[in-house]
Length: 172
Length: 394
Image (cartoon, rainbow over the protein chains, first blue to last red):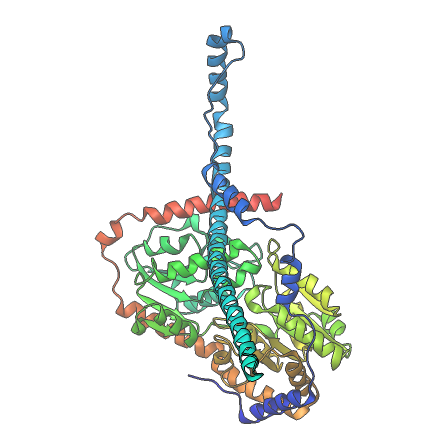
């Protein structure tokens, strides 16, 4: 069901619209979109899509922390004592750090997922523009060839015209 | 038999939160036992029998669950696993594209909500309530059965607005300056930027003695609110006031002293503030989008353009032409009768009575089936929520 303004309100709006058109007044205030683009799109640092895609790829494969690192000892002779001690310490502290590692891994995963979306978005845009650029290049090439042909034909026409002029002048 | 309402977040003063409380009162008036369960409950909510979801009880055969659907909550799918009679109240979901300007978390919540309602929740409820015809058609478009959807507007106890407004605020705003008001949380779909641009033009070219009051909470983590403030500076416009979270009496004072209610929102499933503005005889100018024209039902002034020059003339006409103003107010008063509390209450009660009589309770075998998913998700989320709350308190 389409809801409409009351007839007298509609007339009031029509008059206001008519007045707006006749007055020639224009709103020159920047729109929010223009403001936003000016603030966020104009960047001093050029954005490198390739680096972004590469870095995201690395991030996607390295976002999880390994909570059981290999236990080592700098003094190889004492490693048979140091390693079990370290193991015990690790076991005793596990209740403290494991939940933190899980939580951090979760956060990392979320961040990585977010970047995956961004990468897909940028990638899609990048591929789209690459396709456009490729088409533009092909068309430019075609244009160049056409211009070359036009130039050659113009030259031929000029020469033929010259010969015709010479005939008319009774030189040949 | 007990009727449980489940909502993702029970906020104080927002449309869904108010609807939950209103529905609770309506059910209580029917003499039925009822309670509200939510993942998190705002501290300001003092309503009895509102509990967090971890306290959700074991269901009985004849219990009914009413689920308020409005975002991408983790419990959307879990609720579908409950073995009982279920009703979904569909409040609509804001298209997530709007939120890319603001917060990725909000955008993700909307995206998930839309995904859930299109997939895992479809066909899992025995009946659906839509706040508006717009919401109803939205559900039908997503493949929900027409015969199971009933349109019942949001229940708004309009007599609450007869309370005394904040005197200090009334005095402050009754200073001869034209007050243009919008009420709604600061979110990109509400298009505060359009309100600001239109107001900037109006103030600079037509009425320098004017102010724009934007009532509603904002997402502190979002970018949109900060950008709006920077935009106001860029436009060099004065007297734009973001009220932030204010008391109910202060909101009443703002409505009481408003000259025009301007709404440029591009996505509304119902838009309760329109009813509030009608209650206070504030002429409404609203952009023609989603459920807005339906809620206005031919009253107010619905425009299909956001041209600041045009809208400034419209505002000026309504502020200065007494006859036109009275005409709009009269039409709004008539429209408001449609949303009268008693009327919508009866509609809801009749619906519920019919539902209870026509949808049989679940069998005891069905009831015995495990609802592990629901309780697991609830526990997981309540842990997350309590951590978040304690962090916030710190």
